Length: 345
Length: 179
Image (cartoon, rainbow over all chains, first blue to last red; front, top):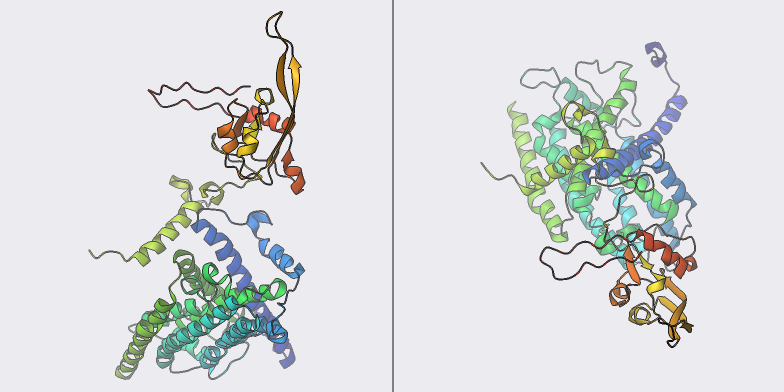
C-alpha cells in the first residue's frame, strides 16, 4: 500500500463498513493469537511439553480444528433451564467484548468510535459481561453454575473498583477522558524535559499500572482469580451446562476480552498506537498503529498469562481481602498523590 | 539482602522452564529454538518411549506350564480370567509304568476390558505360567475384542524381559523366564 492510497477520503458508509469489519478482526484475531501463542504454546513450554503438534505446522491449525469440533456438537439445554436466558447469556458476554474494543483507538483515523468520555464508556460497558455471566449461572438450573455465577458477580464487582480508581490516576494526569487524548498526552509528554519517547504513563503511574493489571486478571477470571470457574470445586462454574457453539462463544469471549483489556491497558499506560518521534496525524499511522497496538497487546497478555500459568487459585476470602483491603486503599493513595503532583507541577 | 518473595520466585520458575524447553541447546546454538528437543514429553505415535522393563503392560501366558489349577481365576478380583480344561492321559514316564493323568488347557482368556492390572494372578501362579510383559500396544476398536485368548497371550511371552538379579548377598536364586 502506498501513501497516496492511504490518503483517499472515504465516504461515511465506506468508513462504517471498514470499521464493522475491523471490529470483527480486532476481536477474533487477538483472541485466536492469544489462544495459540499463550494457551497452547507458552503454557506447554512452561510445563516442559510441546502442546498441540498435529494440526498444521507446530499445531497452528489446532484452533480451527477445535472450532470445527465445537460447531458440530449437539446443542444441549438442560430440562429445567430458562431457555431464552440460557441462549442469550453467551451473546451478552461476547457483545460486551465488542463494545469494549469499539472504544479503543488503533490510529489517528483507525478508531471505531471516538467518544469524548472514551475510557468512562469502556469501563462502563466492560461490566456488562457480569450480567451475561450471572444470567448464564442463573438460567442453567444447576447449583454449580449458580455458585459460579454468584462468585463471578462478587469478584467482578469487587475488582471493578480498583480498576476504575487506577484509571482515574491516568485520567487526572492526561487531563482528558478521550482515548485519543490520552494517547496524545503520552506521545507529547516529556520525562524531565526529555521528549524522546514521550511519557508513557507506565512510568508516572506505575502503581496504577500494577493495580490495573491485578484487577484485569480478576476481571478476566484468569487463574489466581478463577473462582467463578474453579474446575476442582465447581466443575466449570457458570459454563458447566454449556456445550457446542455456546461454549465456543464463552471461550472466545474469555480470550477476546483478555485482548480487549490488554488493548485498553496498552492505550492507558504504554502509549497506545503512537510511536515515539512520529507525527501523530500521519496517514500511514492508520496502518502502523494497529500493529503497534497488537505488539503491546501481546506484551500485556504475556504478563497476564504468565501469572495465570504460575499461580494456584486464591481462596474466596483472600480474593475479597486483596481487593478491599489492599488494592482500593492503594489506588486511593495513588489518586491523591497524582492530584498533589498535578497541582504542584 | 532481603528474601525474594515466593510470588516472584514462582514467576521465575515458570519462565526458566519455558526457556529451557524452547532453547535447550548450549553454546552458540542457544539462540535457535528447538522445543521438540527441550520438552520432557515424547510425541507418541511418531516416536516411542521404551517402557520400564518391569512395567505392567500386559499379562503373558506360558501355555505348557499351566496345569489348570484355577488359582489365578479364583484370585482375580474382577473375575476376568476364563479357564476351561479337560483331563487327558499321557504315556508313562518309564516303560512299564501306569499312564499319567494330565490336565490340558482348552481355553485361557483374559478380558482386558475388565482387568485392572493388579497382578495377583501373576503372583499367585505356582507353576511359572503367567508373567508381566511391558508390551502396551494392544488397543482394539471394539470393547469385546479386548478378550484375548491363549494364543495371543502366548505370543506376548516373547516380550517378557528376564528377571533382574537380586541384590548382592541374596540367598534367593534368580528366577528364569521359560521361553
